[in-house]
Length: 577
Image 1 (tube, rainbow, N blue to C red):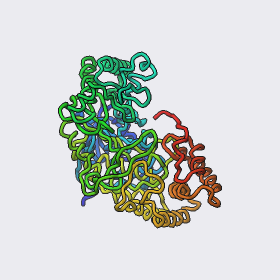
Image 2: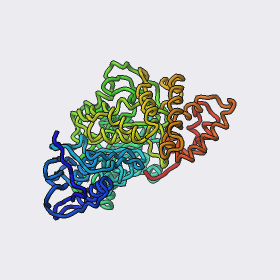
Image 3: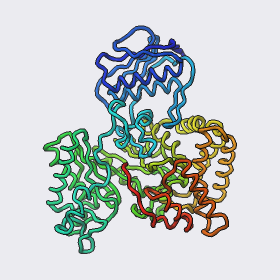
């Protein structure tokens, strides 16, 4: 293949009227190229002459770009300012750069040589979100071509999805504390009485509709930069069963009946003043099944949630699901169904894809009951994203460990893989994994590669749920012993070689946690082992064992109970997300 050798210090040219993201992309190209060849790379306006990198804009799209390398250098043509940023990092990767983590980049030394040719890329999903703490770093997130709403990606870096709120909002729109005493009829009727605790809204009550419309209009007026607002159920069950709500849901065959009719009405009313705004809601828990009759409006986003699924096997090849979840308690019912069956989630995905113009996904990529516990889902990430793409999904939200500290259980590998696969679900995940392990673990790469393979294959025929306990069937003594052997070898190879030693030590916390949780309280040396574990958590920057639970009390729960069974008693903590 013909190759183009770029001169040392080649220039970067941009249009005269280039917007801020194009200028940002050019500066990034110049800076990284300078780190490669040791020279200064000027950024100038105009078409320029000679072998150079040229950035061009053509249209207003969702981040696609084309790259042409020929005798004149490299020409990047993007369909949007964001596309110019994504294309710039793609070009840098062509030059040999790798962006594995906020604290792990590979920048090769030497002149730039690229193969001649043209290629085009476009994102598989318009909205690509990783709800992992490290992926919220805007400078890193944009290198993975993410546009997560909760990231710190700036407009200059290409911008992000503008969700004002993206989660459960019923209690913000019609707060129980404000309205229940005077208007209990605004809230769920269950077994003949109105609920104050763990309640939802009565979606056939016209005053509830009025309050929600007023609330969304107020949000929109006060936050003009945002164009998506959530009108979504609280994070538990208990839908209203008053005669009017029950009649609608029976007619529609799903709790989504009242929900979509209500959200449609909000969307219609809000559109009168804000025609550009979309209203976001959930197909979740009792609303997951599509309704028979009503169809979401074009300005409604429905986000289907996979919380009951098995995460050890691809969704379209596993019919097993949990019988339900207690999100607040962090527990799920046992798996049921047969692996060879079609899961109800897959039926729901297909159903929503037929009736919803703006179908999004909320997916789960770690264990929320036990953050550090190995979660054997590496083998399903690509296949599930391919499934979502085939269903016409426009946006995917991959929830992970969003604690304020550092994570374990192969967190950074999953962030990197998910970022790459959200852009292109056809990417070679094995090659991506190999490159990541080599770059991230350095001298410990060989045993860590085997460690990754061990957990990729650990589940076998076992199913994995997002609240699995430390005695999950895939956490066998043989698997744990093999993991300890590989981690021990990795620690020996990385000893004294930072940052690799610390990265291996952080990963070793995962297996140490399971061993401690599986052991009996009062066992010889266990209390001292928990103390040492706690000190290492602090040293390595880990702040949570369980989702949004105080660390000191979490360690006490681990100390006094087997399988961390007392974690439900640990006080919750709150922080901005």
